[in-house]
Amino acid sequence: MINAIAIDDEPLALTVIASLCAKSEMIHLQKTFTQPSEALRHLRKFPADLIFCDIQMPAMTGINLVRSLQQDTMVIFTTAFSEYAVVSYELNAIDYLLKPINQKRFTQAINKAQEYFEYLHKKDDTSIFVRADFSLVKIPVADILYIEGLADYLKIHIKDRKPIVARMPMKDMMEKLQSADFIRVHRSYILPFSRIGAVRGTTIIIGDREFPIGKTYVAEFFARYSH
Image 1 (tube, rainbow, N blue to C red):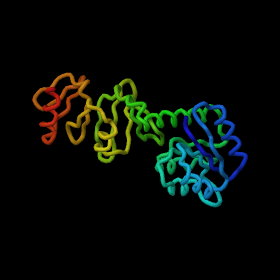
Image 2 (tube, rainbow, N blue to C red; image 1 turned 180 degrees about the horizontal axis):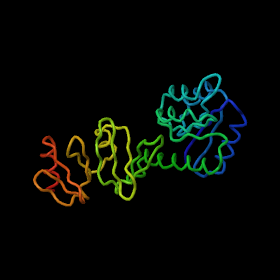
Image 3 (spheres, one colour; image 1 turned 60 degrees about the horizontal axis):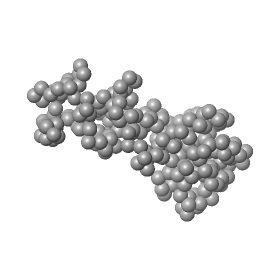
Image 4 (tube, helix red, strand yellow; image 1 turned 45 degrees about the vertical axis):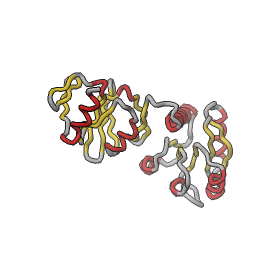
């Protein structure tokens, strides 16, 4: 069960959120606030797993409220203004709901929060989450064909779906994978051992693709591959 609070300067909007949460078995809405300062005081004493937060509030914007949080909390922004999508993405929001919020769209956001909550608490080590296309994207680890580094971005090639491009260093991706099946073989490539078809010299074959093994990665690759 995800413990949540909601913050909005309009009481009617909070009533809508409370009604939507009441229909979900995944969310326990503990409290609602019309004053951001009161919500922050509450969160310092009673941290929540998830915050529903309006963006445009007179006393403090939802953007500034989230930036001032002292703990890592999932956030779903609620707003009548679509131009805040980019900012919500930069603040690592789980989702961004445009008012008026309907049940179907709310359920999609809650499902994302539930999946990410389980991922954070290590109940699901079969998938990873990355931020791409202004959204939080779930990728089954077993479906990753290979990962390609492109300057400040990664291109994740996935079985039976189009590649996902995410802004992330290769080092961070290796930490996120936390799987013995993956190895970095080049400054530009991370590969799964399970998909390697053959190795010829310092060239790895996966399907009809060839990948070079960088000089600094040769020793580690062959030490692990030989086992």
